[in-house]
Image (tube, rainbow, N blue to C red; front, side, top):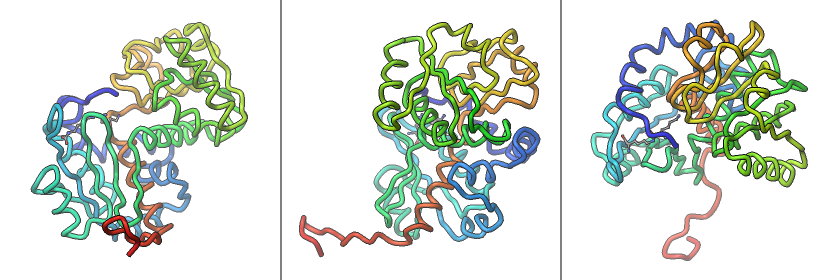
Length: 296
Ligand code: 2YG
């Protein structure tokens, strides 16, 4: 799990209109549209109305390595840009959670050193950034490629994001090959998909050969310089949620508008849209409130 730096994120919230223009040129949809697609919403305008009525709070967390300057403000800026009623709590940590609930936030976003989640307390549900990032980037690749059904897709990296990327690809009936620097991790992921989805994915053992034989690639690694210009053709499309970006600058130039990469935006957009989906599916928790261990 890569820890972002202030440098990685400090300009994001001021460049969201330009980023939307890029996303529309690459995928036909904006950040909201990609997030909505990741959460299974086809009709964006209807979704936008729902979004405006849902208040979201971002709570700075000081545990562990502490606050990343600009992190909460950037997450909030992405949500406001998408049309949500979002704010950063004045307090951090537990006081921030209490503040969020006191002002009626239905979704509370917070990150410590290990997890970045969107909480839906009234529904008793959480949305994890790793899984949302995976679904967001796969939705974007799907839009860039005009559908993934029956298409061969290469996934680099078999960590948490890689696993959820494979799940999202299999749900779109893609033909998946995974590669990881640690062969055992790739084999482990193949075993998991056989057990959970009764589906076989292919394990690639030679990175260069795998890159040269795939036009659709998802890079979830935290390595720089994995995808080079020699691996890129005019039909190659890359979704790269990994930080730092695994695509070299020459390869990015060659890819032109056929690459998706950002440190936070698509993942946050997918988290927010998934939270809206949870709230619309289940306006309030149906399970009886439990106090002192007894049902109320
Ligand atoms: O509240 C704060 O400012 C800090 N406690 C945030 C710490 C976030 C640490 N995690 C990361 O930097 C990334 N895993 C965030 C998600 C990146 C998605 N590609």
